[in-house]
Image (tube, rainbow, N blue to C red):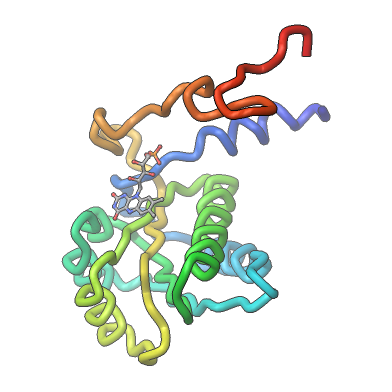
Length: 183
Ligand SMILES: Cc1cc2nc3c(=O)[nH]c(=O)nc-3n(C[C@H](O)[C@H](O)[C@H](O)COP(=O)(O)O)c2cc1C
């Protein structure tokens, strides 16, 4: 443990989805910092199967907001980064998720809120592709909304908050076993 460890762990554990943003624009230098973090994400065989589109145009984010099932909150985001990936399957999805989580954590370090907006249907991804001029081989599965969190508003439906307890999701040594006494 160093002096900064509790602060870092709190930041990692405390990352939440922002869905309500202030109008304040995101500093383009901060966007560059996030892109640099994204660039260094590890991927399977270092394939780096992604292309990122930075969207700071309000009207474009409003249009994107209408494409997914739960993406309406994008309309209020001063910036977003659409993450498009090449290829299919678990490994590409994992790479995509790693990049997004990194960007979201880096955003938090910059004092920015962030939220994943998922374009789950093929039709939604086609519309995103057409809007942003992405080539056919790239699948824009999601956008990361970015901006200052509006802390005066609730960010999530209460029923979606919270987490299952550790005892329910962790075993020690063998499935179902608790942490041994004295460890
Ligand atoms: C793969 C994935 C897709 C998600 N898609 C959306 C989405 O389209 N819209 C949304 O509002 N939140 C989306 N979320 C955010 C989750 O709903 C959120 O992380 C979860 O409810 C826990 O809330 P919290 O992050 O605030 O703790 C997504 C999260 C993941 C991991």
